[in-house]
Length: 109
Image (tube, rainbow, N blue to C red):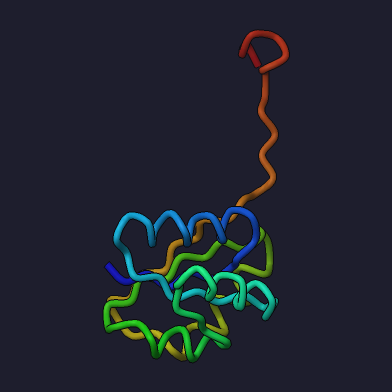
């Protein structure tokens, strides 16, 4: 399977390597060019723009976002939309702030 991965922080970088190790073809992009160069050294296909990322993926694209939660997700999706077609899949795999409730008292809220 071909997967486009946006965001090469600690989680995204390791996810790209894991996907590749398990037989998937990964095309990776990050705003930090040095991270793109690092992942390229591991045999992952680099992309230096969202347009380039989308053009390197076959139709019915699967694009996995590993970027911080918040407005940036909406901004990136808006930038990505011109390069997507009907049937493409976008997965938001980033973190959000999660506050566990009730863990301090045995889970009783």
